[in-house]
Length: 220
Length: 401
Image (tube, rainbow over all chains, first blue to last red; front, side, top):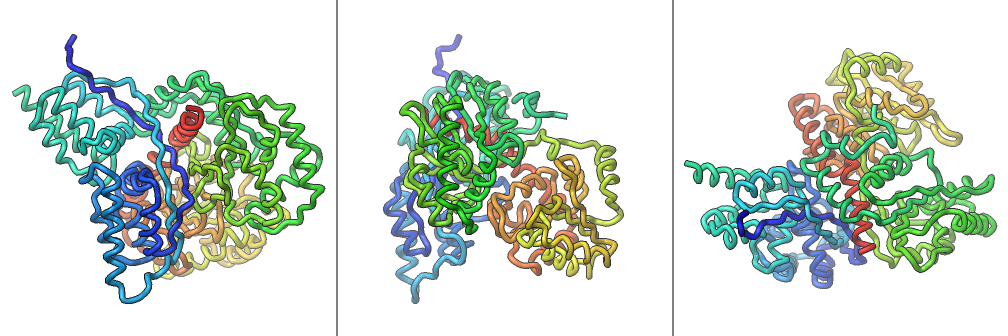
């Protein structure tokens, strides 16, 4: 039996709680963003990956989506879509960037910001309940094989939530491959997979491709 | 055919997302022994009932001790419950103090009769709402209101809100349906059951048999709307969209809906009149419990239209997408939440918009296949019963620790 610390795959259940914060135009969106709990920023910027269709060719977060579809301010929607939560290790920094982007946009508007033409923006927060899947891995091959089978919420828990939960700014996968398996180059390749690729299944496919290539190199 | 309690969670392996069933089994292990009670005003009709019919046995299978209690009352209890339900949905009703008193007394009687000792009690909709007035200190209580509570009738809501506030949390199917409450409010979307008669796989022979029974011709592409023959269902708007399409494409329109209820169905005569002058327009008044018929109709359609002026979540959209059909939907209720624009169909605001999108799909048949496949995957991930089950387990885990 190997004495390597196993990687224990956890999945997560998600519960979305509606908060009392609402925005009817872009100015209110910026004001409310300063007040809502960080779990709400997480819900609309990162947890959006839990709900989106794999093929949606639209803005990558709820704020950009609302500004684009309800306020119909394409310029701001595009700027908000460029705020990348996966480049940051804290939701407070993401919040600051969103507020600053909205503030800058408002300063350059020649008129009052237009109201939403449809629904107001309703703020949520995400509650995650972590649950062991029963899968664990001690080797790279076991890790790849388990990753191919697990529920998609495992990808979310370890790759998306993990980077903020641990404060490392890296996914749990990258941490384990780097520190436990001591494969720094592979860890670097995994770290470069863009979580904004569109869906959890696509993120899974990218990881499996990189891991399979590494295993093939190992057996050559 | 998979029916009611004979269905096991394992039966969903072939249709649920990868890893989902195993994960649900693991969650069940973690929550094993907890007791969950659902309370509703009926065991026989409505989408909540269909969902509970499946969820309750599966939850028990998972090890969560789950029961389903039904409130009963005197002769006018159902009438009062329906009136209160409509009032909470914002339709003005005449509801007297006497009616509210009887509702309160009936709920108190039921609270004494029903077994409500549980870690989590989930009370569904308006009928049993006031059962909470008799709650003890043990266990957590959740009120699941499946319709629109955003603009309830003021007088009725003023009387019921203090009781609603006694719950530990409320659950709504859409954020915009959430009522003005200061308790935590969660959003859980409804689901379709892929193993029900409405949604299960169907052989071509069985499909043809069902369509023959409905006297449905299959010689041209079929546009289908399923919905009530009333103003809110907007079948006449769909007829007008079809007429715009018909100028360019040789198609059939099928409007299928339940028989009119007293006071409803006020558009049936007009669509039948239109159909009498157009052999390509069919009006099908469905038999009772038309699950297999709807399954066959949706599978036969090239494009499904769901264009009500008002609706609740409108889970019929997901049912059609599960059969691999692109859906043209209105912006009402939960329809926009189910159709990623341009991916699984289109959300439209006008008759002309519906016609334009239908023509676009008929002009690009490869798009029909691509959107249909995307729709099925979208439903698999977000609107299947297995996801709904996970949502209830999340609620149980979150509220009971």
